[in-house]
Image 1 (spheres, helix red, strand yellow):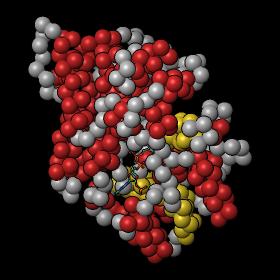
Image 2 (cartoon, protein in one colour):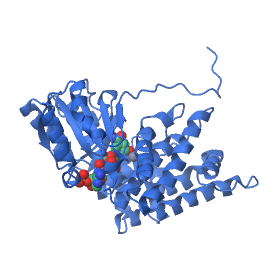
Image 3 (cartoon, helix red, strand yellow):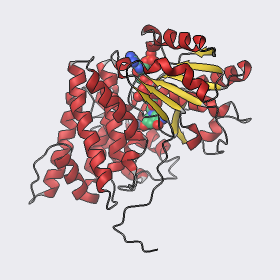
Image 4 (spheres, protein in one colour):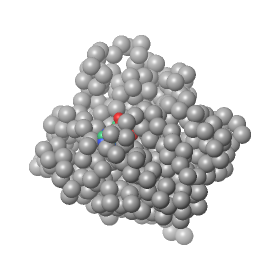
Amino acid sequence: MVVNETDMKDFIYYAPTEVVFGKCSEEQVASLVKKYGGHKVLVHYGGGSAVRSGLLDKICGILKEGGIEAVLLGGVVPNPRLSKVHEGIELCRREGVDFILSIGGGSVIDSAKAIACGVLYEGEVWDFYEGKADAAAYLPMGCVLTIPAAGSEMSDSSVITNEDGDIKTGYSNNLSRQKFAIMNPERTYTLPPYQTAAGVTDIMMHTMERYFSHDDDMTLTDAVAEALLCTMKDSIFTVLKDPRNYRARAQIMWGGSIAHNDLTGCGTTGDWATHQLEHELSAMFDATHGAGLAAIWPSWARYVYRENVGRFVRFAVNVMGIRNDYTDPEGTALKGIEAMERFYHAIGMPTSIQELIGKDITEAEIEEMVEKCTHGYTCTQGRFKVLSADDIRRIYLMAAGLM
Ligand code: NZQ
Ligand code: ZN
């Protein structure tokens, strides 16, 4: 076997979820649950949007008509909590549930994923999130997506917050992939502008985490990533002006899934530092995940761009529409970062921690985040530039305007 350094990196692409996309797609829910073996379903949902829109009632009606029994568990909050997962595990066991159907976004689907493995595990489900055990089995799951953002409908991961210590952490397992994801863009018309913009920020960041890489020969993957980023950039302005624009809502909805089902990661080494740093922010301040990413990324980018200026130039030119000044690559790279900051502000996203949480953050709070992000100063984060605790502290300080 001849391996050239410039060859595309080997990869496995695994995206087994059946996507049912389009108007009225939720009407297929009963046949899809049956197709994947569900007889008694836990219908899991959030704080009320699915109730207010009538979607919950509609789904329950369709399940009933299809002869499928339903047990309801609502109340999942953004940054979903471990206590709700425990409640779900207990309920599923008591009721003999054999399928979990989520109605909502990343928070509900992630909570469902944790319940689905917790039900079949004799120990404490948090073991998986602490890396003490690996889940060998999950109840089958499907979802009706109502917010394009986290990409959990096609991803292998879930992120749960343990209220005991405000620890927010993720767990990845291919067995947690949804059997089906129903996506009707019309169901996203009711999203408030802030959630819409935070969702698009997350979608773009899932692509950018994979795009900022030192790997070679990922021509096709780069082209897909850039097309996705440009499409999200255009579509968000359309939906902020016209929330019921089906075309733009549909672009964003599908973009959310392919941004995190690994299509934009084929042949690249993901970075994920911005995500890791953000998780501490949303754990400590209960911030919206996408908005937290916007508050961190510009500082991360300014801190790391010299590791591969060419990559940042390419982003500036192909995504942010900056003219390439061949005599000044660093200048072009920095203009791309500034343009991204202007974009975040234009869609109502913060670009600093103060803007995100609405107050100053203390150095002690920053140190607590550094400690958690490095698991007690024992690990690094990121791959574009491997970040030590000291690097992470500096990025937080920059994002807080303290450096
Ligand atoms: O709870 P309800 O009332 O439904 O309101 C929700 C919630 O307040 C609202 N909403 C959802 N659909 C709506 C709607 N409001 C009006 N109309 C609709 N159609 O939106 C708010 C946010 O919902 P949430 O599910 O929290 O959003 P998102 O999908 O952004 O999920 C965020 C969570 O996912 C995690 C994040 O860390 C965060 O905890 N992530 C999960 C990932 C994964 N599993 O692969 C990857 C991501 O990087 C991310 O970390
Ligand atoms: Zn994310």
